[in-house]
Image (tube, rainbow over all chains, first blue to last red; front, side, top):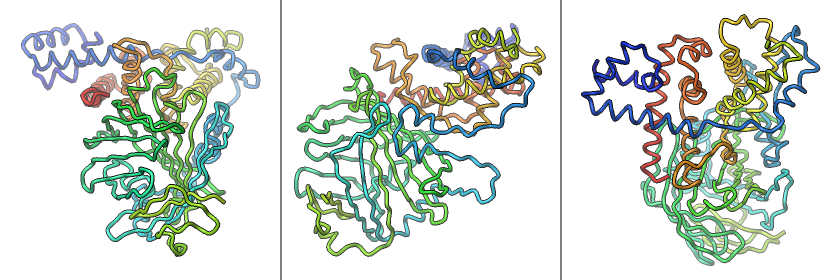
Length: 368
Length: 166
């Protein structure tokens, strides 16, 4: 046997699934082939890794619940029609608005007129936008899914597209690869500085004082089979406290975008979701050491424009009893911006805090 | 013990429930979806038990039902990494074990469904290739090929992951 014949059989060989004759031929080949021997070692290592991962205990009471589901059914009856299962996720306490909107899936295969658009359609449509505004709200959910009022006020954001620039929605163009992120914010007040280098992924974010998560990555993320991986050294600031800078390695895995159909604001839209895992070494001692991030974006199937963005965070410094939710809503396209909004004049009646001029847009934290 | 025997159903779920739940969890990626899917599997088994002819083992039959139910649900796997059940400390630290678990889960989720299902049945569930072929309704050689392809892709993903220090 040669290597091309041997390697496809190594998994079955390692599992003892091959016939005696084939297994003997493979052993003879391995005796004289370091490459296949090394490959076999990798196969066995993966198998061992799977064995340490495989056990998932069933939840307590599962058997009772299964048995309790029987009384209304008869073995002779036809199988019940496939029911649409909704809101179990909501029942176990996922984000309120996310449960009402993002988790409200209707799958209607073969339904005439079922809206389906691709993410590329959304990117293309957003490229035609000249001005954009939205409202950002954020809050926490407790472990029961009840909303905890946040001290953060709604933020009104206006964005203006520059020639050859990309409208910044806090989600970079090319959501699938997080590579093409551009822009520059200048600091004028309390330390908010963000710099991205065009064409090369070196990102340095320094959060506002006493607020937010900062990341420092000095190498480009990599993408393979749709899974995005990025890592670096993180400087972490804890929300609500004076900036406490520590340096800790981190690792982010970002899964491919999933596309669904979901109802929002009374009509069917296309929902794109993407899950990320952020492992921060400094969180190892936390009850919930891994930060889980779900990004959801709704797009109108008629206009292909974004109608809502939602970011859900759980774990990490939020701990086991809270989830953080950020929602960008009330998108308005190509309207004339209020006078002076890009000059950093506050909206009428609003009081602005921590402002700084932006080349791509402006943020106004308004008190109403 | 027949799956459509109401009196024996609790014992039936006791015998196979944990295993089927585990498989459903690996398909769905979340505990809540896994329980829903497990319920569907056992209800389908109860209602279809009279059609079970014993040509395969009950376990193989249940796996097949689980895959059919999963395919019919038309869901995408949802990643539930706040659920750290089942992670045992085997490396230098529990954090490393948790990271390894997450990395493997992520890597599996990146596989095409046909490769992932074959790999899960053989490597995670410990089925023989012949049994997995019965579950999937494909030739045994095709199962071998899919497991090999899945293994190659996973090793490539995980090797890169390890190199980045994740």
